[in-house]
Image 1 (cartoon, rainbow, N blue to C red):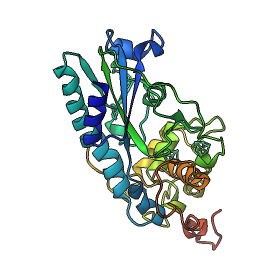
Image 2: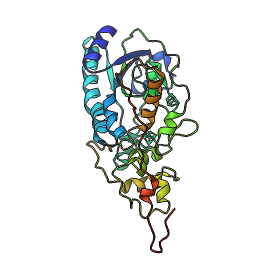
Image 3: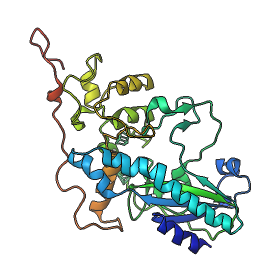
Image 4: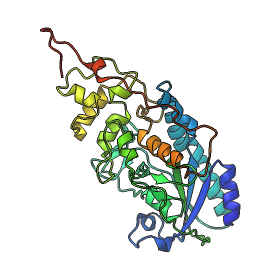
Length: 321
Ligand code: SF4
Ligand code: SF4
């Protein structure tokens, strides 16, 4: 049945499938709250088109990543696949509990998902558990966790999205991968236009939300030169160097309306997941990715507007620093 599932998964657009026995997870893991009789966790990897990152790399089109590699994947491609795959399991008499990411539900009161509008998120009042998808994918043998928290796979590096099925079917399991891709090079942290990746690799979600939405003017072709007029540290914000609290992140995002959001509350990604792109370029350059392309993704140095484009002259002729 595992082979039959994988064949169907490929037909539905999945690229990789891995199975973890439930016993691989700690007894208090959320999978057991979601489905106490779970015997196997099945993870699916759907690649994000490398070409969907092209527009941000060129500084030309920004919707393609958001619609094709975020909204479409989360709202159409993966749910449709999950229904068909779950139906196959249930046609064999097993229970199949599909797990797609709740994009707008946060268990903690200060939780944030940079991919959706902050005021579209329900926080804290929701008890519904959601397990850590990257950790579960690692348990399913699909890849390893990179320094900045993304799943890295041999074929696609960090360019993929994930969904799961919990089932009472006891399927043959896949071994956990020995980490071999992430070399702690730090390119993911350097690539972020908002310096959102900490020294420990942890991403500050609220800061990330501000910069995912384009708070760095040097990487945002839609930002007018007079942006953020009421922020005393406007140039630091524009350079990605300001202190950003959750409250300030909300205020910054309230002023970023240079580019309209997509549907389902998905914000248009102006950073274009630069952390993942930097990681991808690094892994591609090292030649360790198994999915090869005829040309390298990055063929020239990254573009950046000068900060001086955003400096404003005061009435006395002095220039703001
Ligand atoms: S960019 Fe380097 S440090 Fe970051 S996840 Fe990729 S390989 Fe690891
Ligand atoms: S590059 Fe974008 S998605 Fe990655 S940490 Fe920075 S702001 Fe967040």
